[in-house]
Image 1 (cartoon, rainbow over the protein chains, first blue to last red):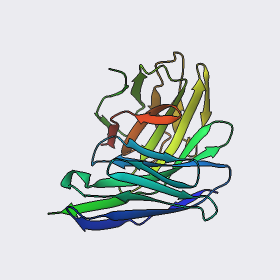
Image 2 (cartoon, rainbow over the protein chains, first blue to last red):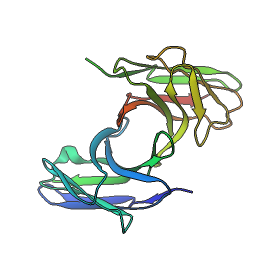
Image 3 (cartoon, one colour):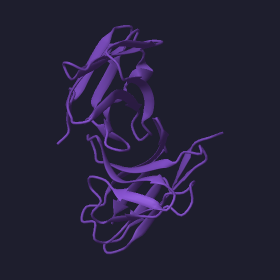
Image 4 (cartoon, each protein chain N blue to C red):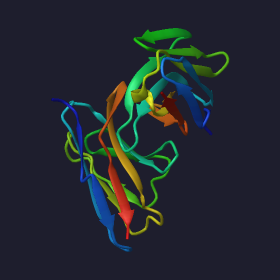
Length: 111
Length: 109
């Protein structure tokens, strides 16, 4: 089966840096993606890593180590609006692009 | 603007009743998906379709049915056979990156 593990909740203050880890056990791994979801809203795409290393997009960066089956999302200069749930998701090469989601990490940013 | 539209936003169903959730996209994507999300949980795949007139069961298809008669549309029917249908339902389409609709919150009354 497929499994993704990430912390259930993380708290931080405005302006801080936070890292959300994701470890996965899957077959047919193709890439790792991160999505943000505000309460009651739709998940929105943040990043995608197919190769080892760091991808940076503004205040957000994502890292992948395929040999360790591990990735993380790094959020810098935290803002109140970053309070949301963050999901890691693995693309599986199963003949179509199947996306399997972790259970999500709830990030609470306080003033 | 291109995107995915789900309707209705909120839906109430009586026990034993079938209901259909609408999903329309104008992104010209071939692949479309239906996910279910329960409180505090991740998204679980119900059904997916890679092309018009073709669809496949996902991980939790029991009690659900779909159709894909047009590229733009992928409606989901929650049947009376679904024992615990109260959840947040998300439709997505993709050409690589996934794009999600704003969801339908279904409650059984």
